[in-house]
Length: 450
Image 1 (cartoon, rainbow, N blue to C red):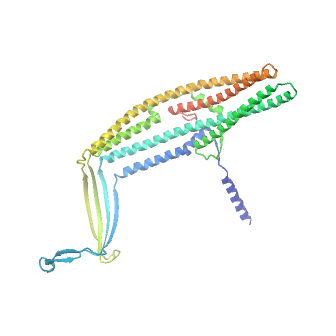
Image 2 (cartoon, helix red, strand yellow; image 1 turned 60 degrees about the vertical axis):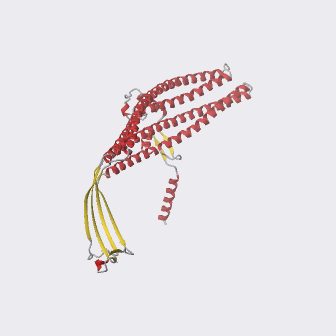
Image 3 (cartoon, rainbow, N blue to C red; image 1 turned 180 degrees about the vertical axis):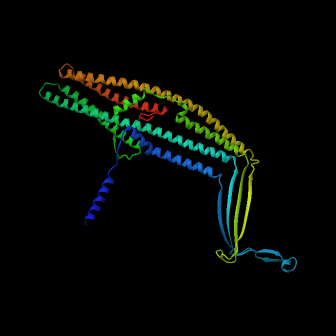
């Protein structure tokens, strides 16, 4: 009885555990590593490599020995009749005698070996399969770079929204306390109604900011979960503080590698594409070459009046053959030439696109460098503006309490502070995004990976 109770309790515990959403806890580095393994894009990119590996073997296998077998069984329900001259069977000249040749039933077992000896398209196909595999590997690297960039941006976005929500909640709590105090002062006739209403307006504005930041916070968290390949109802805790990430970014900016165009992943992919077009042209040209293959077959046959093919005492008749097959493409009415010319033009287009891609990559890197420098300046200015706005707001609050500043001046100072707070966190997020984009060109990331 006790065993039954224990089993029931265990099943209830398992059922309850499975019903809860899974919990995750990540630093920025851990989130990036997890996403590279588990994000939807990374999973499919690795599957593309698996497909390319099998495709390469498929191409290789076409030039290796191919063995096929077949078994045929025929039952002549109505055997065909052939007419032979009557003289053969002792009949009158000019007459024909109907005869039936063969047996009612026959069976044949055959095995054939084919071996490709030379085919120009096969040699080109091997190179194309290797190029396709290289392309798939580069595509995985590109995907992982994009995943990393997406995770870093989403991770910092969540932390930024968390900080912004906390700031607005603190502002709201401070204003609510000030409003309650002012209501008491107003009830005692020591404050004007305008002061009370002005503070209420400020409180409504801050509440609106807080609600908007909370909505953005939820969206940012969902975007991070999607980037990580997690379910949207999963519990997610971020362990890296925002300040540490920013300090790490600034430290990494002091020692940056030189930009190497040939090492940039988009350059490699563009180069793969050009090579593919070149191989397609070579493939069309190779179709004008002869192909040579050898074959050998072995067969055994049996002829019966009834179904007795499984009896060992009945005879089977063997035959075998070895041969060479040469295919000569002699004349195609210009078909091969037209295809070859099309492939050549496509290759020339790819070469032009490759040159354009190199220029585009260089311009994109220069733009990313410029954007990062701009966002650095913007963040520094926002940081200074926030310090000044806090100082101004504090002074105006003191003046207001002492009756030296109007409620309008206090409202203006607070509004300036709230705008400075938003501008600070927005510029911080923009700075991290700009650095992450710039680092994709330098094979560096905001995580501490080199």
